[in-house]
Length: 255
Image (cartoon, rainbow, N blue to C red; front, side):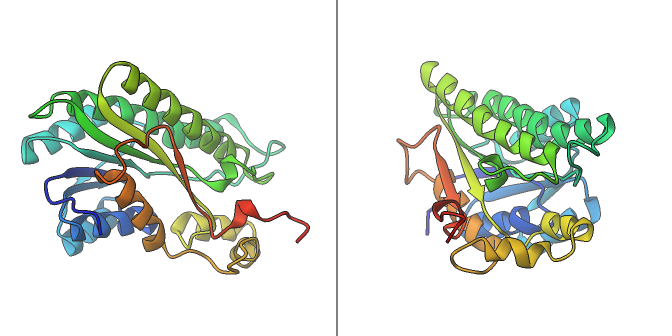
């Protein structure tokens, strides 16, 4: 297990799914963690159970990012890790999507991730001992194989991939020891998938069948990859992508 005993982490979308598993994993690895979520009750309960601090946050709110990062630094003295996990779906195709649904999913999934990167870099640059940190952005296999039933989600997660590479290379060119990588989960048993299944009955079973492992991932399996990227175990990895998809993107659809 990575040693995160000297690290301070901020994890968005912590109330359930991958975010909840990530808070638990980072705490178990020794980090001091602040989790955030728009679901204040669920997020607070998870953080209390895991031994983390909690703050309510809508990641699409630019002003709130400054407040949350300031709270982390005030509480712990630094910020070493940001996990941009918060996300939502629209469950609308190009034939159904309206501007409200499009703007909300892009605002949370893509703009929220950008705002988090920008705010975290500002804090990491001021860390005692010099600029250093790790940003882990959560995309989706829909960034590689888009869903016809959700144009906004697919577009936003593809955007996260490009955003992460831009952030990573900018930090490197600036001489900052701040890495940015992307985790690309496949079929994971999360609240978002459950929400999508309400619109598309049988979706969980169908998505699980796309993996050669023929099952959904447990969120803890994705959290393990996040913990590795957050740690000092991979200092030369930046702008990279880690697939945690059960082999989904490695299998020809005809087989």
